[in-house]
Length: 114
Image (cartoon, rainbow, N blue to C red; front, side, top):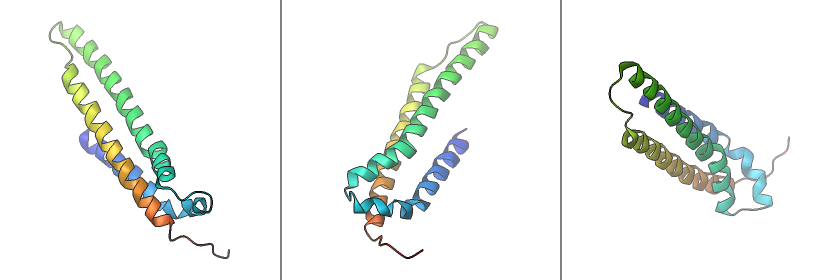
């Protein structure tokens, strides 16, 4: 599951970074880094954190069902919380990295003929 999560994170980051040049036209309206951090948060952090929360809820539900069948043990809330916080930290770090990279990259944008 960790490898699958990392693959998804890297794919989302790669797609965002490959589309940076299309954000160049926004520099004519607003060239602040905050704008590009917001775009990165909307495209990277929000989906990653929402999927982590849904994944934690599903894992807790399925774990509870499996434990009720066996009638033993309990779901480890600290492990689920640690995984959720880890993914949230990675999402925030990627948002900051991709947002600042986008802000730097679009400053070199200039209109070109079609």
